[in-house]
Length: 549
Ligand code: GLN
Image 1: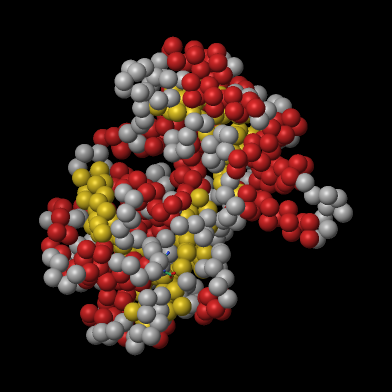
Image 2 (image 1 turned 90 degrees about the vertical axis):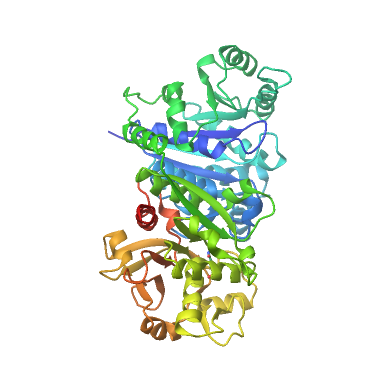
């Protein structure tokens, strides 16, 4: 039997940003996947940046690295975590990447001398990218999240492409709009007007939403559903209530409660086998809700003056990976942000770190807060607090060891002081050329690389295998010149690139420390709630042991 033609679900955002469009898109994809359809997800970022690599994480949120090395938006991470799949870079698109292709085509005479126009050439490029993704991922259903808010000047191109795709394949395209229904306390009732206006703005662009997901602090009542249905020209069962949830992983279950998957399948003409198999997912959510005993984790980084929200977005994969591992072991993670700069001052008392069951130094760039981080790592080592260093956190762990155990007082990374006497962390040779030419976009060591693990180490106990693949995003590495002296002082390089040149994991033996490990890669990018990453699991196990003592 030949495969049905692929179906496309476009997810637009109305009213305002920050209402959880990415999570909603992930949840829609999840419930369709639970019906045994092969689903893939695309994110469209309307920015002119060609990828997310050069965007500041405090402004744009975390840069999520895909297996093939593309630096993308954090929502790609949500899709991978919800769907438990690996997405290719071709599933991420920006205004910049689309124009980049069109301009290259134009330079290569691909348009055969025609006048190149936004419609049809640029819109066609968008449509082709989406259709190719369906083929590449062998997908029955493609969920496409259009970033930004309806009516934004920036996403007109993508809304237009969506309209044209529907025109070409009327039975295969579904439009979902996620909106926000505010509940002004003084007025005392939920207001649907912003939603009506958002629907109208989509209508102006030739797009009629098929389904409206109404986000709000609480459940949308029947009266509000009727109103949205009437004014936005859809049926009442196509208005889905999406109140705030305790955990993001509950959202697919909430959508199902409102019958979303059967509405989606019906509208797309897909067979509804009746069963939406979310049993394992449900069990996982139950575990999250039942977890009562806390593990306290300190995340050590530089202070971002804009507050917690920005912060949790900048490290979303680390925070999620911690949650996956902790909930999996029945524990509730309490994650505190620790400002590293505070520990730069010599007489600062680090004893306040004793309250933590684990400490993490996540990835980072630049010199701010570095000495504070090194002091925290020293404290974790000397006081046997379980420690996980991610990328920069591993490099700094090696520097701390070189300074305070090996006795190389001035040890540093070339990123901070290229003139330091002992550059135990140095620029990778191929990076030197690129930096000279100010070639910064997508030029780091990026994406998935193999790593071989030494038997009998913490790493092998965690991964239970000798060969792993993890994702990278860095320019510097442990300098091969210092490996011998570090090893002689009992630092174990338990994970290495297959050619033995790059040090991927550094750790201390169990005899010296219950759990002190750093990885040059980012294990947080491959963690999902159904399959927590082994290093995070090992960290949480060590922190549970610490609590027991
Ligand atoms: N700044 C370091 C490097 O480029 C670490 C990068 C990171 O933590 N992602 O090597």
